[in-house]
Length: 411
Ligand code: PLP
Image (cartoon, rainbow, N blue to C red; front, side, top):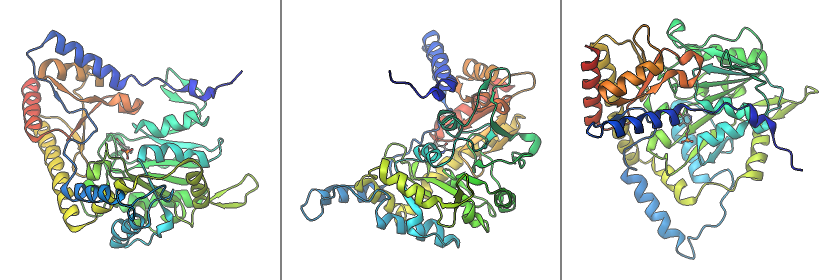
C-alpha cells in the first residue's frame, strides 16, 4: 500500500480564478453582445523584445552545429548568465554577489516552492496577508502549516502579517519568534513597496532571531521611485539573512519562455538541531544538482540578452507601457473617488471597494455594469477582503476603455 503525503489534504482548494472564469463565461453567454475587458490577469501581453529573439535565434543555429551543440548544461546555470546577473543586477547597484551564489532556474514560482526542501518541518513560517499563494501552499504541502481553521480562514501554525491600509501596507514585525519570513516587494497583490529603512527592520529582526528572509523581487523592474531597493542585498547585512528570488517573467515578458534565478549567499547559515551551522548555499546547490538539470541554453542566452544595451532599452519601453496603464487606472479611479494603492512601482493597482460591499460584490458589480474583470482581494487571504486588484498588463486602449466604463458605473 502506498501511503500519500497527507499534508496535501490540508490544502484549501483555491476557487479564485476558476470562480472568476465561471462567472465570466456565464455573463458572456447571457450577454453575447457585451465586450468584456479583462484587467484581472497577472500575465504579460507584450511580445518578447527583438534583442532576446535575436539571441535565441542565434543560439538555435549554434546548437545545430557540431561545434556549438549543447547537451546537459551546468545545473546551476551557465557561467555567462550568472556573470551577467552579478554585473548588471548587483554590481551596478553597489552589491557584491558572486557567480556561485546565483542559481538559474525555470521560474520564481518553482524556486519559491522548492526552497522549502532545505528547511526543517518545525520551522515557524510568517507570511504577509494578502499574499501570493505559492508561499503558503508549499509550506502546507511540506507539513509546516498545521490545520486549517475554516472560521478564521487561516492555518494554526502560520504567522500571518496583515498588510492593509491601516498599517500603510508595511507588515509589522511578528510579536513571536519566527524562523522563515516571506516578503515580496513590489508586492503582489497590493502593488505596494518597502523603503530601505523599512527593510532594514526586517534584516535586523532576522539577525536577532536567526531567521531567514525569503525575498521575492519578481516585480523589481517596475520600481520607479528612489530609495526603493531593487534587491534586499542593498540593505546592509542582508547577505547574512536573506535568499532572493528574481524572475525574467514580468521584467522581460518571459512568462512563457521561463527563466528566473535565486541568490543564496555563501554567508547564509542554517542550523542543525544540535546548533551546528550549515551553509544554505551548499544545501541548495546539492538540491539543485540532485533534482534539476538546468534551464535550456537557448533560454539562458535570451536572458543574457536582457542585459545588452538594446535589450535594456527595449524592455524599459515595455515596462513603461505597463506603468502608463497603471497610471491610467490609478488616476481614473481616483478621479471618481476610489481610494487606490500601488500602481507606481508595480503593475498592480489595489483599490478599496465601496463601503458596505465585499470584494466579490464589487467583482459582480464591475462585471455586470462595466463588463470589466478584476480580482477580488479576498482571494489572496483574509486581509484582502474589502480590496480589489486591477492589473496593467492589458493594452492601453482596453485599459482606457475599462476605466471609462468603471467611472460611468460609479456615477
Ligand atoms: N512571484 C510572484 C510574486 C508572482 O506574482 C509570480 C507570478 O505571478 C511569480 C513569482 C512567478 O514567477 P515565474 O513566472 O518566474 O515563475
